[in-house]
Amino acid sequence: MGSVDRVEFIEGAPEAIARFNRAGIPVAVVTNQAGVARGLYGVDDVARVHQHIKACLAGYGARVDLFLYCPYHPAGIVDAFARTSEDRKPGPGMANAAASALNLDLTASWVVGDRPEDIGLAEAVGASAIYLGPGDCQRPGVWSFPSLATAAPFILERVAI
Image (cartoon, rainbow, N blue to C red; front, top):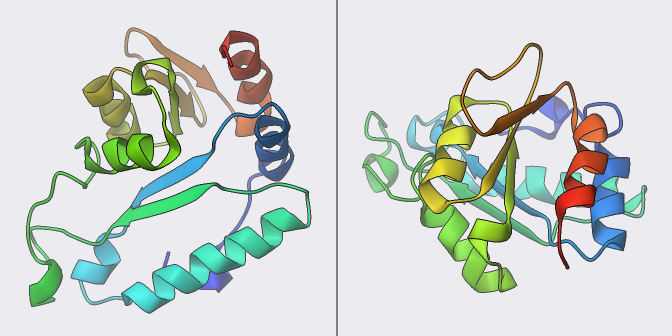
């Protein structure tokens, strides 16, 4: 994800984020960026991508309240980032940082993602989990949806603000 050229919004995602914003639900992006540790791109590239996402979402009246990323990976080749970290999903580090920054109760929060690490993060912090993608995630307590647009009404019905 080191290049803005690779940013592609799934249909309906910006509108779903705008719905969360209007409902007063904080939105945080927590992402593993092992490409930094692997020397594929730098932290400035990650910052540029996040700025690009912010600008694109603004066109939909949507915003992300907090972007967090983990540049570390134990198999990295860039010395400063070649290590293990609790921030790396499914570790709880980034979720705990988001909770602190946004005053969140993680046990009343939702982790939405398309990878096993995302579901593991939800389990690690006691949050509810939504798997996005084709097929179902065959894990107890995980709801599956094809997109954020289809998951948004489900989440909005269940969030107590």
